[in-house]
Image (cartoon, rainbow, N blue to C red; front, side, top):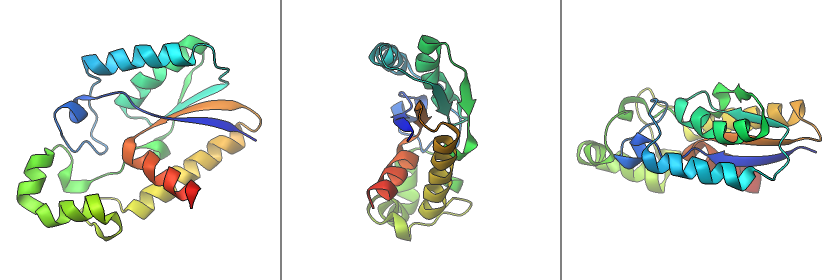
Length: 163
């Protein structure tokens, strides 16, 4: 059996400025770097055999806290990426609310009914992340791994695991 720590990236500029980041790359904030320092300290005494991260900068930088502490490389995995929100990417949540309030409501309350041109469905993201986690577990049978991903991606995976 593989033990996995599922960890969301530290605060990035998109979080701070309330931007729909999706798969848009953004940098870690000053607060995010403080979170990363606390994360490194939290995992200092934990046994970790491998570190995996979405290939987006905010997750790789966050994963560096655990990887460096344990002298491990970061295995980048695009399957762990955040949901692509299509035309919303890079827009503020306020802009989206003003332009498309009904669709934003669906995204928040009924994500199964949400659709945005060029975006991934929640089901697609869930299946992508679950497949990545299954591959990681298979590659690391009997080991302990730290897996770094994103808020929506992790919530969908955890929901699938909980049934």
